[in-house]
Structures are given as C-alpha cells and as structure tokens.
Length: 440
Image (cartoon, rainbow, N blue to C red; front, side):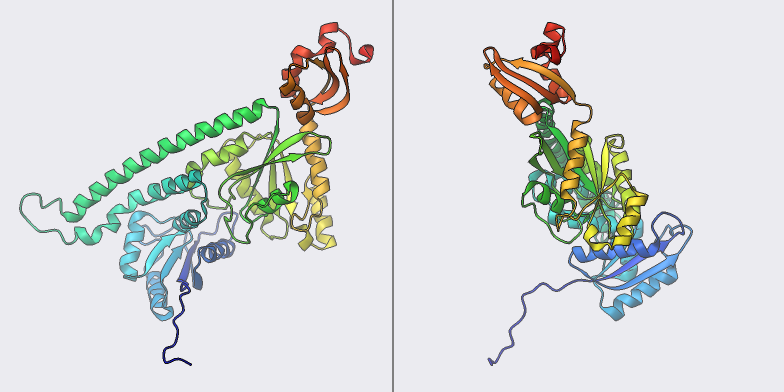
C-alpha cells in the first residue's frame, strides 16, 4: 500500500431534516405527504436523517412551527450534523428568514417548492424546459431577496446623508431590477416558443392526425408506456420528475390510421403555482389533445388520491372536459383479487403493465375505438393531382374500399370530422345525391 490513503471524489450526500405541520384536513395525511417529500429529497440527491411533525390548526406566522419545535429542530441539526431543513409546505419569505437565523449558518432552510424547482432545474433538457424552470425559480426568489441581503443591510453605516439606503439595500434594488428584467425577457422568449409550438400544433390539427396526451402523477410510468406503444427510447428512470420536456411520437394503428402520442410532465400534489404557470405551454399539449390517457400507478396505495391531483391540474389548465381514459399501469404488481376488485370499481379503465407489455393490445384497441368514435363513412373520388390528399387518406382514414379509376382514387373510407371536411369537395355521394350503395 502507498503512504497516502486515496480520497474519494464521489459527492457527499447532504443530510436533510424534514418538517411538516399536520392541520388535520386535506386528502393526504401528514405521513403520506412527508413520505412523498422524502422521495423528492432522495431524487434531489440528499439523505433524510430525521422527520419532525407538529399538530397545529394553522402555521405560526413568524416561524411556521412553534418555538419549542424550532428549538427541537435546532438541536437535531447539531446532533445529526444536518445540512438542510426542508419544510413540506411553502414558507413565506419572513418565515424562511426567521428560521435561518434560528438554525444559524451554514444550515439551509428550504420548502417543498424550492426542492421541486431544484429537481426541475436538474432534469430540464430542452431549451424551452430550461427557460420555464428559470422563470419559475426567479419568480420564487424575487420576494425572498430581502432575506438574502439581510447580512449586508445590517452592516450599513449609521447617520449621514443616504443612511437609509445602505450597501445591502442598494444591491437589493439592483438585484430586483435585474430579476424583473430577466423575468420579462424569459416570458417573451417563452411566448415565441409557445407561438412556434401553436403553429406546429395547428399543422397537426389541420393534417387530421388524432392526438393523444399521456398525463399522470410523476413516476406513474408514462414514458415507459410511450416506449412500449411506439417502440421509442424515451428516457426512463425510477425517480420523481424523470421526464420534464414533452415528447411526441407517431404510432400506426392496426386499421392503418396514424396517431400521435405525447408524454407530458408528471404532476404531484401541492404542485407549485409558479410551476403550473411557467409550464403552461408544455401542458398545452394536453389541452390540444383529442384524447387524454390518465396513467395511474395501480400498485400505489394512494392511486386514487394521485388521480384526484391529476384531475385538479387538468382543471386548472382548462383541460377537464377533454375526453379521457384512465389507464392503470404496473398491474403486474397486483394479485388476481386486486385486479378483479379494480375491474369492479373502475370497469371503464384499462389495466396494463407497460414494463411487461401486458394489456398493451387491449389499450391499443381502446385507443382505436376512441379515435374512430364520431367517424363518418363517405365515398370520394380524389384526382391524382391531389397526391398529398391521397396520402392523407391512406394515413388518416380507415379504408373500406378503394379503386383507381380514370378520374382518380375512388375510395370509401371511415373518416374523422376533420378529414371528412377536407374530403367534402370530392364527396361522390353529395355530388350525385345518392348513397354509396347506388354508386356501386
């Protein structure tokens, strides 16, 4: 052995204490909420060393938790050598500042919102995703600047002209102005990207492609399902918010119709308002869909609560009235009795295992049913000069009969409302005033 012991270069995990207030109301118990907070903490690379709870009717305005609990947490920080204290609900700027003074440097105090924003910052891949995360982070930081500069404000010189505007206060105003300017710039950039996305979405709408959005609680298996159905290789990992950026893939149904599937950002209970606002352009993929697949982790005991959280976000973005199908994923982890009970309680839902492939054929059949609902049967003659339209017929319609005649393609098809509108000028039935049977 050498004289010197090699030092590990692996990053040292931060040690975190979780704090939650039980107010005795809400769909989620304090234990369930803190269990989810622990998963978020682990996703962000930290280790939970202790969990502290307190029962209160309402949070304490000054420090969120009572003075006795503040002292208890301070002692835990010292005895457990903790680096960060994470609160399960959003703290006000003054609460965060007061707690940081009580716990003393270098201990950090953050809340659930800051933790989620940190995870989003790590996982955003596309330019739009990174801009959205930056915007949400700056909106969160802006009202908290005063606390960040309090150490400088306390050092300002007493007396004399301008004594009310010390070094910290001046820097505070500069930073506020810079952040507001940056927020305005980010919003403008996101609007440009949103307009581009809207143009692409409009093109897909006009093409007659049936669009499906995958939504669901984070880690429900949406990306795995997208990969299973389309044969793609979207990034998949067993962690919260593994996928932030929307991914669209094309799929050919058995009948020949082409559809698109879009994987969207996962939802979570207590999803920060700033994130919902910042990610509205991404969530607009769900708003523009013809059908929403609500993917649920059937093996999670909180499955129904998670589905409620998804419905709440869909309602918030105005997508609550879009047709939807509930898809219970990870059913390979259920026994026969649990599957039977799920079928009785939720007979309209589809049970699958995206990982194992179980139920994939049944889901595709259900998608085909939904995609063809409202279709009409029409007979058209499309001139050969309209090659793009002929291509669209083969891609977007279910062809019942086709024949190449002198005037063009003679076809009887099942077409969606959009496609039937495109084909209306070439509708033989309308022109001859007779049904397809008389044409034959």
